Image 1 (cartoon, rainbow, N blue to C red):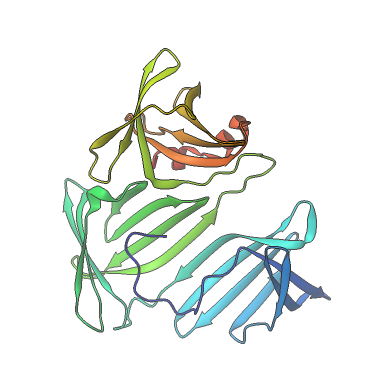
Image 2 (tube, helix red, strand yellow):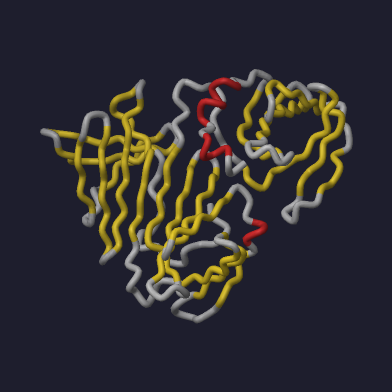
Length: 285
């Protein structure tokens, strides 16, 4: 989820994460959407085309001048099950219905951002300083925002023709594959902590609020913290007979740790989690 929405979506709903395709003669002839343990058969969208590759299916949806290209990748353990691994949406920047954006640049970086909705003319100001796990880059007439949510890296590209008014040109979603890891990347960008250490022992924990200020977390008999590696802290919570864990990562070395994974029990596959956190993702944490 983004902190500011595009305000325009040519598709009724985002695509689900898992499907089963019926493929005959190299063509997709049917699809089932997988919800939990159920597979729900649905008709092929009238505005969709499919290309079947080796272990992948590429689906293209068209609505007017807007397109979405989805890449589905076969599960390594079930060749009939496909996971959505990549999606790119291209928008019609000439449409009057598209919201417009304004960026205040200072020293080549984005200092402030506004969004104006075409139909109503209403303006929304985005507090860039509070957009955590996000980064902006400026290149000529293009501003790119990159953010991480859950296990999905989102890239928004805004373009301008007059140097002042920007529109969203493309939105790219890239799902980080878990591979064989037992601990899966699941970034909670607004769950942030600061820790004080004595060696590898956590002596104090503080919750970080949206404005960067902190609140001390009082000690609790059922909560422990460990530092299994530099830049990582594991919080273990015991409630009765149940045990849970949460992993925090300081990717930029600024002392702020962001929640990047969680699970039940006490065993964390740290090596598997580290393999999912690329250098690009680290710069957002």
